[in-house]
Length: 204
Image (cartoon, rainbow, N blue to C red; front, side, top):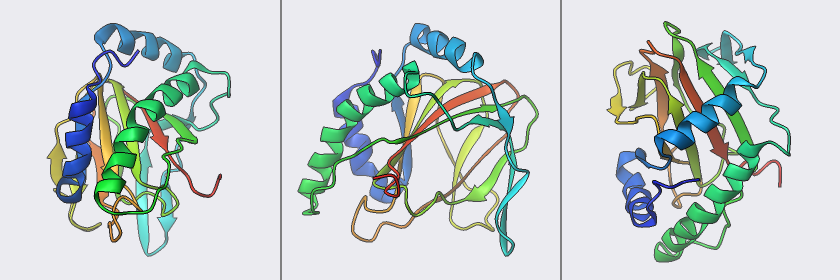
């Protein structure tokens, strides 16, 4: 597993997050994606709430998710592999920046499925409690992952992101004054399946 993950590429990607906010790197082979797709399809899903967030800044959602992956599921094993690979890269980055030690602990796992023609999710920021870096594995499908200057900026910058790749997006604590990026997903015409891995400080 993770046969395409090159730690030197991961280190360069982490170094670029100050400016780019999000970047994707190769991670899984086609065969590994197929294996993960089978596992993802065997999970039960529920529809995301159509609208979430504050009344003054609503976020529209149109996808399916599973946020209750059993502890024994392979996706948690995969999470540990990624944590062991990316954790030292993040630690080296923090040391280089003179930041205090804060180990990457991937304790939050979500699997999402975006059916063809869905609206995806409008510009939003992840919760403040998600620390250091957010990781997203793209298993299948198309669509655009965009980073936006603000919630109201609908166009945004499209981040190249293909099946088999893992997207790294900076989160609070990445640097001393890192600002969470607004981001969205749209333009899905083929079933998009993702596995999201996060370090939620509320769980520790």
